[in-house]
Amino acid sequence: MEDNRDNEKVEIFSQRVRAGKRTYFFDVKSTRSNDYYLTITESKRRYKEDGFEYEKHKIFLYKEDFDKFIEALKGTVDHVKTELMPDFDFSQFDAVDSDEAEGSELKWD
Image (cartoon, rainbow, N blue to C red; front, side):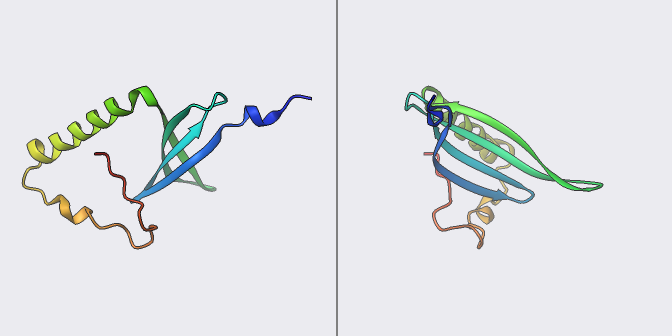
């Protein structure tokens, strides 16, 4: 009989970020060959006539792209903050929501 454990993707670490109507999940998973990758999932609750559903969008990020991804994300955010919205006070968003677990802030640098 075949061992099914090899077919399962193992979740190693997970972190949730609530952002208004959206929730972002940062999950580290393992491949069959014990390599690691990151999935970033945006989940948004959508109302329908008969209730609601969750719309999800997922990005798979592999270790060889981690540094490039972080650099591009940081550069893009810095551009918005310094060039497009230099007078906006972004510090109002520094506080973590009270219902979030301690240590749930993501630090990219």
